[in-house]
Image 1 (spheres, helix red, strand yellow):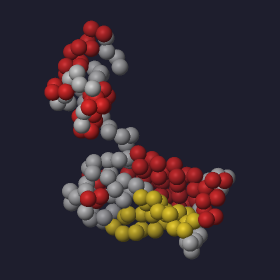
Image 2 (cartoon, rainbow, N blue to C red; image 1 turned 180 degrees about the vertical axis):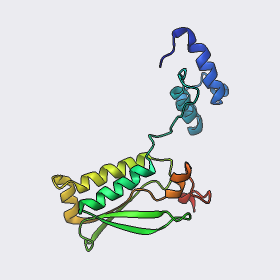
Image 3 (cartoon, rainbow, N blue to C red; image 1 turned 45 degrees about the vertical axis):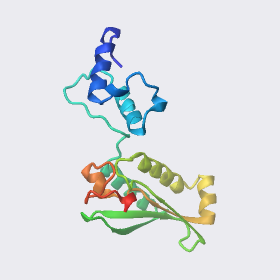
Image 4 (spheres, helix red, strand yellow; image 1 turned 30 degrees about the vertical axis):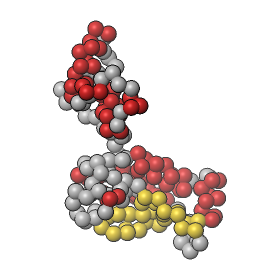
Length: 178
């Protein structure tokens, strides 16, 4: 990652120190706790010499609130789903579901994403699912919608997403632990 071989040792010492890994250097990663394995992953990610003074690292690929709004708008504009505000967050943001298929179907499938707002990969997954369900030429999506109504809530914790929280809502509560 842009490091000269002569700079490896100094760079490794720097990330070991900044990630708090001094006590586990030389240990088999399989023997480390989940927290230390995550730190090792972070250390591997930042093992480089930044070209800029300020560098941002993301635990997962970001999913912006603007993209979220566009996803909801484009899905609704397609005419192939229904948009429903299920409720409002503590800070008044809409918690929205997109519903596909016959609302009276016997089988009702629900997919919720981003209870933990920092887990953006869940909304990327939800976006992919929504795109498939919107695709009139997707035989798999059509087969699912023949048997079930599908409801997708791409972001269950919009306040946490807005505030940049990893696992909590606007009140500092982990929604999966209440």
